[in-house]
Image (tube, one colour):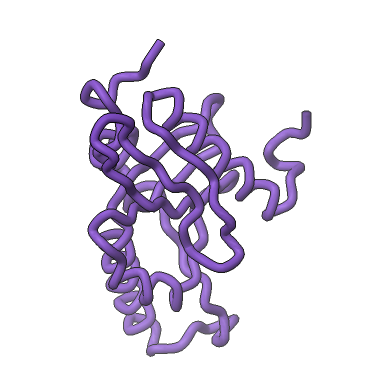
Length: 161
């Protein structure tokens, strides 16, 4: 198998989406991958007893920060209450997961990005047309392994053996 650093960016994304769906299923939720070419939803997960359903955007990193398009982050500020963002970090020996409500993460990212732009005169110095923005681990640390906030895992989020 290839090492994470040897994968192309689209492969890294696929790995992250599969890891999230597998982890949710392992924990007792019913999760499936979706077609991500037309929507920001990568995984749909449901509680097997209550049928509560959530939509999940997955971002995966193998380097220092996750990348997000600021235009997509701005649009995600209007996401529904049941839309979540799961950030997968492939750097540790085992993948790490950070779970946050999508619209909250988007609002925070847009605020931080706009404050940064303002601090440098309103224009990116080297790549003024770039729409990329970074999500460092520090911005989502509180969401580490917060699977319970999804509300789709039976038994208070404990994994089924």
